[in-house]
Image (tube, rainbow over the protein chains, first blue to last red):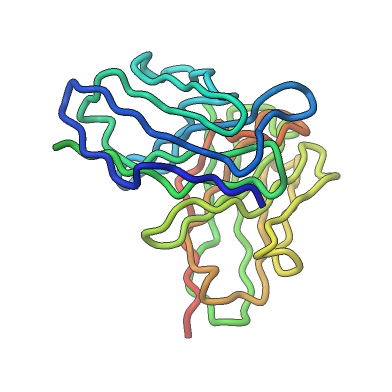
Length: 112
Length: 121
């Protein structure tokens, strides 16, 4: 199985400051069609997960532009340019290139 | 507006069976793969199973293969997960999720609110 490793486990951030989450895969996520199937999800406390980013850097409709995804091959990053109170929650990366589909362990973003 | 509404969760004894349902609306159900993802209490997300829009293709996580069966009724816009030989480690909130196309399995753009399954004697 493809192992998705996120860091850090916990990320205390000051309001208005940037935040960055790393996600590394045990194999390249470049599929045979040339696409890289790496997603980011946000799970706010008590809520269902919500997709933020798909195919590395494509932001979903309604997702604030302070969220951005980047990376290639096996190394990926989710950045929040200026953290707001509503960004508190757990963030997961997920690979969609191989069976079984696998998630990272999650990164908990909290306000300092 | 896309809506996914799970039902059928509850308490079941080890070795027992349970069937989850997910009623979908707001999109052309038969045109999209659908999946189940679970989350054990206080833990992360684990993909469980996925089915193509036509229902002809199914895939399972190794942890549930041979015990769980995913299916769909496109005439009723409903997704199912039949779970049998349940174990304590199957205790989790089960989320119904919408895939990215008929045979597009790489991402989930909508999630339901989840159904809690508790396996305990």
